[in-house]
Image (cartoon, rainbow, N blue to C red; front, side):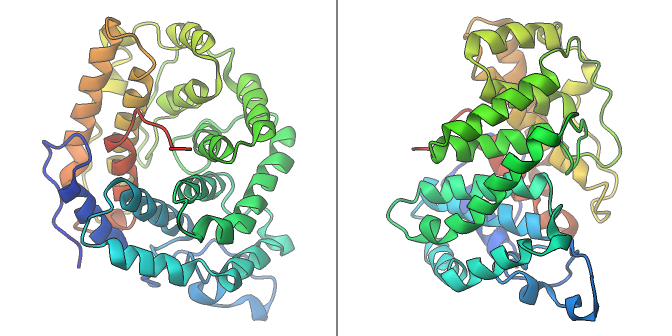
Length: 347
């Protein structure tokens, strides 16, 4: 049973909100069914259930949602260690992050049919989870989980040199979103070579973009393709270079143009898993606006506009984090991104 949803007036993480989100996530990360597998059957022996295939990330309806459910719990435990759910989170992590279970997740990825498994969305989230686990220095979880992070870091190294074109979507295939998340890991792990690869590819993909039209949202997006691209470059470019690029990319943002980026999405049916994505779009826009605002001088006209946009998008969807499993199994993670935006992983 999940906790009640927060009210729309909250715009930053509080202990009460952290406890509510923790209760939601604890209710689904170990809930095996219903489950939407990303799994290729090469023969009858491959017809196996989620827990057998993925002994850690078998819950939350799908693998990637389970990964960022764990990220949410790890983040809440670090930021609000006194929440009532803290002992349950530690017990869950002690049970999940064992050498045997990590080895099984790694073995799944070694099969030829898993080459494209969760690319790139799950790759980015798995590395962001590891970045958060690295911040829990007193716990053994990051060291145990590191072999799985190593696999996904290597997948980025192998794939990005071949990826001649970005994927400019507002769903799981977004390359900008994956790089933005994975960069948190590269920083936490002090992997300068991985950062350099991300920077090189982001420049090749996005640096020539100008005057974004922001034709969004589509009917099932949970990311702003426009703002996520900007956030990706904000994380990867030197500040002066990013500022110059951003002023050309969204030259009328201080005038709330393009208007589509400032109007929260309407969600007509939260029991429909695809339409429910639009609550995630509201959260991810709030996250992006706050992250982008953190790069601006206080007297920049866009600073206040961006914060207002973030609050408006949060208010539209924060009351709906829980209530229907189609949103409940993942939305709190995106709400947490928005509520804590503007800070970095502690290293």
